[in-house]
Image (cartoon, rainbow over all chains, first blue to last red; front, top):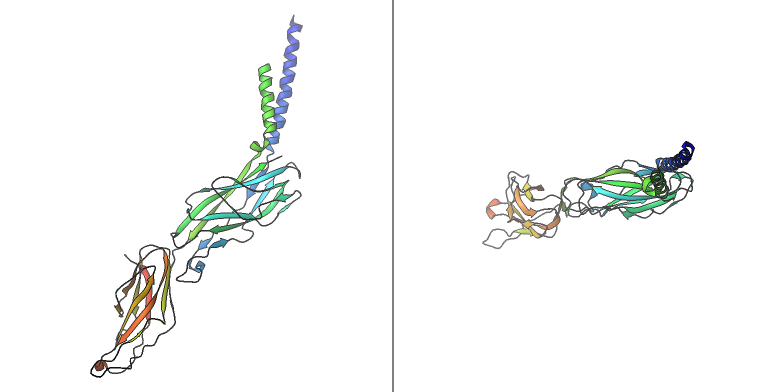
Amino acid sequence: LPLVLEEPVRRSGKMAAIALVVVWIASSGACRAIDITVTDIRPPIIDAGDLLGGAGTGFVDTYESATIQATITIRNSTGSSDTWRVDVMRTDANWHSDLALYVRRTGDGSGSGPIIGGAAYQQVGPSYGSFFSGAGDRTDIPIQVKLTGVSVHTAPGGYSTTVIYTVVDTL
Amino acid sequence: MKRVVGILFAAAVLLLMAPAAIAGSTDSHTVTVTVDAINEVAISGGNLTLTISTATAGSDPDNAADSTTCDLAWTTNEADKKITVATDLVTQKFTLKVVAENVTGGTAAAEVTLSTTATNFVTGIATTTGGCDLAYTASATAAQGTGTDTHTVTYTITNAS
């Protein structure tokens, strides 16, 4: 009688062990998630030198940063065939409603996989939008920033927003 | 036991099928735009010479006037501003007046007889670009004789209150 009871228990135990291994493998894959890091950005200061033609004129329409204002690095991919996508959005602290912020990718950075899209300016909105995509690890992808909407109606002060970049593993 | 195994398998399948949701990584940077207080005023047209040289017999000399040579322009991104005018010439032999004409971005004050005291020239300026013609009028009486007054006229954009 004890032998009859012992066999199903062993079988269930093996299955549970196998399931745990599968879960562990799956979980460890998640632990190797692709990472994204972005460098800080130098804030623009708008003063009288930004008037179109001195007193009596308004502000220049567009402020463009240096072509390498910040860089993005993608790491911890599983290889050059591990595809990903970078999404971008902003969360405002005290952003002025007249201001519009744009980003674009001005280079490929370094890496073995492909990198696609993001070369044209796209507005950074309050919800995620696709920025660019690629595969494999890639370092120092240069980012340029553009600002529009400054006018004499923009009261003096500081206006802040946080630009959030998220890398999504697309397999 | 079967239920436990089933749950573990389901969890494994979910983890394997949804790596995109799990693998998202985020970083951010803050963009701060600083807009300085900007209050700019500029004269165009250069220096102006008014010559009183005619008169009608029995009357004081005719005024000399010009409203086309010089303009004033301004830009401010602040509210509640005004422009004042003053001369540096303390002792004046003759009279020099100025008024803003064809004003945009503000309201012309009454004609000002120039003195070393800053006097309102254009008021009601707020977050705007603007401009006007500078209309000068010089006058003299026969009793004041001849001579030359040289003024350095200064326009200042300042707080209205």
